[in-house]
Image 1 (cartoon, rainbow over the protein chains, first blue to last red):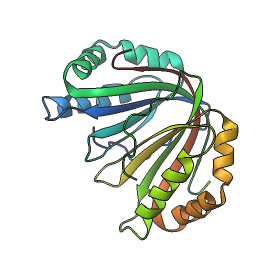
Image 2: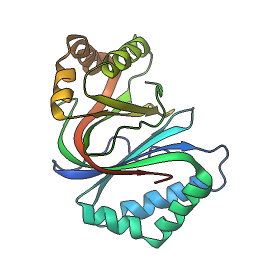
Image 3: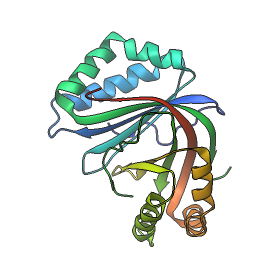
Image 4: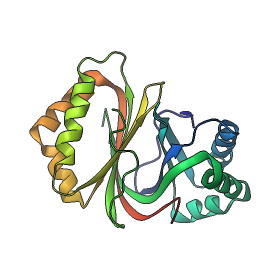
Length: 112
Length: 112
């Protein structure tokens, strides 16, 4: 996935982060279009607070999405198009991945 | 920072994640050597559980380090060489960044 938003700026914690770390398989095979669609769909969900994404030349990528609460995360995970993308991820796009759901307790930036 | 470890494999949650999202300034100016040193130093700390890092061609990078508890995170933040690197980051290497400290509540992977 490309970097659609730079550094996310959710409101002050607490909020939730879903850390998705993945190793891509070679070739596109519909990946870029799917990723773009998932960003558009996910970003429109109630409770979505922001998204950060980076993938290096070695194919390792980290996407962190931020959410108001666990209910919003669970609802997005159940979305039917997202479920189809999850199946594609397991079957074709990702050699390996790990998902971590975490509660952000504090945050600070360069100027804070 | 390059991807020193691929996908991290900490023990089962709960544990902590430090999500460091940054936008690099142009040019190296000692950055790569510092990053390599920080990976070596941080990885050797008590309570360190793993590291994932990716930076795209646009300069946006995400590094997630995993820790046993908040005390381990706080101790590493206070490390004198790390503090020097943090100053370098604010002054030279990063146009912008955000740090988030989060408690990982659950995790699952491709095969789990």
